[in-house]
Length: 300
Image 1 (tube, rainbow, N blue to C red):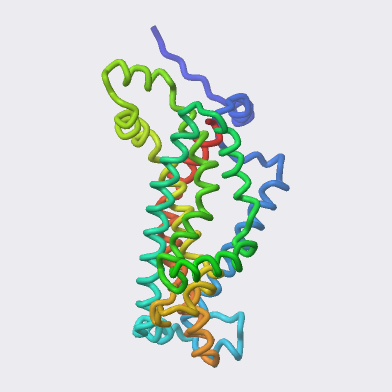
Image 2 (spheres, one colour):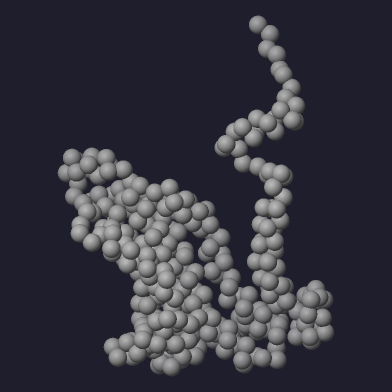
């Protein structure tokens, strides 16, 4: 038997790829889509790159040519920021608040979503709708009553008074993502676990939690970044309390630093670059998990 090979023309290969729904490639017949996508990428990336690169320029160089290239490259601005105790204090505060907020969102969110997704009880749909309606109310609407409430209960000007509201405002998004994710877990798994003598709590810890890791990572990253970038709540709750300025979160630290070094534009840009770097690294490290978690929620 003689094996024969048949050359496949590029045109035929393109037709075969078009018939294969699982094939991922560029479709040059839709240039408008790629133009829009490329424009969105440039709009998002160019300002960030400008801030980072401008941090290596002196203020005199920036004033002379704002759109120029560093000549020469200087790390003096970054040294100034890294040698500031206020930067490290703000970094600690932002990390502390973001981690506790993320922990609270994940723990409370998975518990509430598990009940809404796996239990049948009266008013379940209304409760789910209630969480969904939470997406319609921005922080600015609740700023004044929240400030008064926290002052009355003695939490105004404390980290606890900041962390608890951030958890509350992040829960609607968490519930919306996790409920469809948990509903997609087959009931047969729960029935099989019950036959093996596993309680509902055991089913939750041994089966639901491992299967929900992509969704938990997704809501955790979103909560972390939301807390890290939060500006209004820290402004209302920390600046008038007993927390010293050295321990204000990074968004407030950027404002404070820019006020103190208003004439040193390069140092302000360097501070801004370093302030956004941890959240960006955290997001990029969990990017695939985020996509997987959102895909699972949509399929559910």
